[in-house]
Length: 212
Image 1 (spheres, one colour):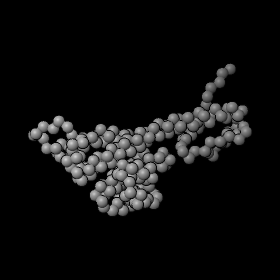
Image 2 (cartoon, rainbow, N blue to C red; image 1 turned 90 degrees about the vertical axis):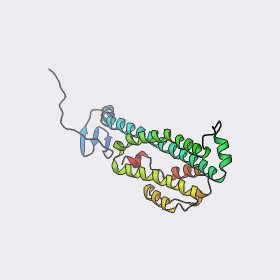
Image 3 (cartoon, one colour; image 1 turned 180 degrees about the horizontal axis):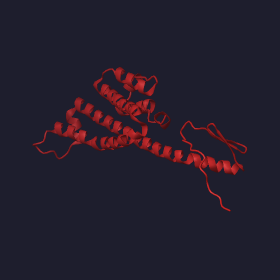
Image 4 (cartoon, rainbow, N blue to C red; image 1 turned 120 degrees about the vertical axis):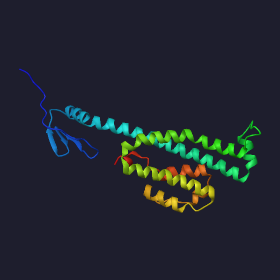
């Protein structure tokens, strides 16, 4: 006497797949199975859902890493813009605070701007790397929304620096985030604080949005 497992079908488990048990009946989408115990039903549910749960957790970690990198880059960009604003208002004081041991052959303003630009290299490269990993995870359509979000927030930062109306940039962000955004609170804050508020309100870096 011997026994063996016989494959009678294959189930493609997705986010929309419904798995439930009712007594000794196990349901997976439109299929119903009789099982010998509640423990068996629970074990089957765990086995059926495990690969999808593991894969989803992996994808959520990729989104979380990209989320942190994007916010870090935008905050560092905000700090650079604030430094540029100080440079515009009081170039002598700004350069004295940021630069020391400058040789006579160096132009303080050029060196100052060069250092500010260089400070963005690391956060930008980190974000760029995480975005490259994110793209195959969420697909082209969602990736375009992510890029639009980053562009929109950066454009608002620049508008605040220039003292211009950020309405166009906010309009883009409203389409991306699918919600109404207020410009008034942004203009009353520093660029860094405005960036934090805007990112908290307009960010789409949420698994339930990107993985649908």
